[in-house]
Length: 100
Image (tube, rainbow, N blue to C red; front, top):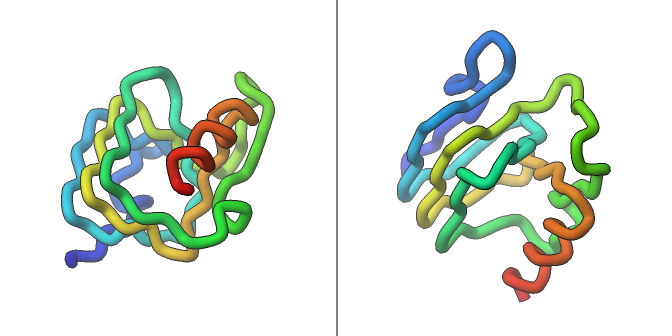
């Protein structure tokens, strides 16, 4: 599985926009913030337990130093242990339900 350093795909504003990653190992270090409804993660593997990578943060709050995902697709990817995911509490709950 090819390793992809997600920060290499971000623009100067820290945004990864409109990209598709399939059968990749996503590595950081990075905290990812999905923005909007256009992101899709399917068949992906995350570190366990979910508390180690899911960061619950208020929706709409700007996250400085994060990598924003806009209209990105991750299919059958593995997220490495240096990747965090900052999402609203309801998104974190839904993700945890899908991981169990």
